[in-house]
Length: 452
Image (tube, rainbow, N blue to C red; front, side, top):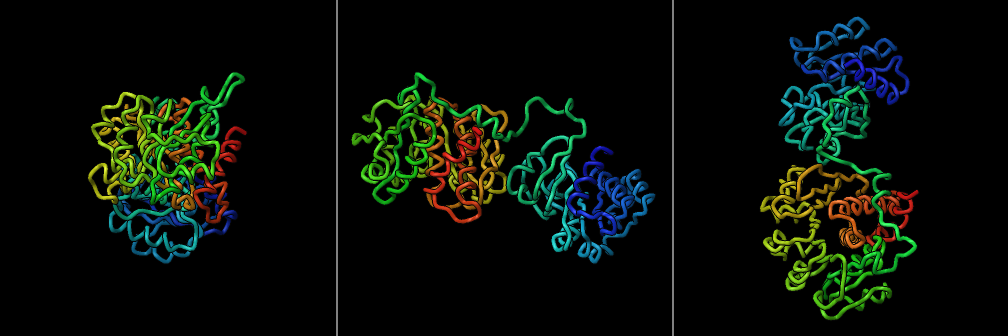
């Protein structure tokens, strides 16, 4: 607890800048998070801050932490007297509820969280924002919205998965010596540049376009030719040596990308590929989706393909399958409301992967990738809100499909594709609106950034 409090106090001091004379309010519950807040508050009080603790459960407050705060010159108030103090604070430290909290905040605590939201100061959460669920990222009621979360020992899944991630603000990890106590197999993984760099396909001296892999794109329709163009754009930048296209948008594809191999005979007559992408802009072309799913190579199913595919055919496949729904498509596949998926993203992606026997990439502000065999779920947060634009998902499908053809597993192809796609969106946008074609162009920049 002293290690946690020390790291917490340092983070708070860095955030407020000048500690001496600053007004600090601690929101203190009955658990160890309240103790962490009290000990950190004592450290700030010894540096000259005016520290006031709001005690939600005075009789169950951490006794050692409270004694330390009072010795350092801090004081306490009841929740009924806290509003003005919180609204005028330079720093509000949230130590109401810890990792065991479920179901949102109780009324007294929710009232304090509301005051914190209106405070002129910064809000720092101890370990995780009170009211969010640590293991799932769900938010089932009122919760604190933090500018910074200082978490201890290890990242909690809820800090990386929406909707809880939106409540956490920036996240800082403080090592408190738990390494030997942490499980060998994590619940969640987040790839970094070095991880992605090790997975990227790189041609060797003896490589040719076929050895590097050929990806087939079965996409587009008379109504949505652009989906085919964008999926091909992503595929050309995903590491495979060649792209084959089948579908009614061949003229549009060739006009934009003359290097693409176009087939008029459908997937069964397109020639050998190492992976297929099917579904973007496919309209109602169920026969093409069915033909692709029968292939004995890895298949990525997206967009209209998710609506048209036979679930039994997916479950019966021997070769790997990667499904890439957004929340609405995932809800339709699971037979639930979209709000259910958005509120429980981790459970939803795991259930989809298990139900369909496929790797599932659940798109969103935090993209999740779950393998059909269970194990850790990968979370990707490289994206940006500017990626919420028409055609962006088509680019991701082509990119991930190309990585499949280049030899990555479905789990790695989805994870690396999401990472590069999100990073490309950030680099292309630089804080301004972008189109899907800009994202496709940004993949090369993202690739170089990762390799660099």
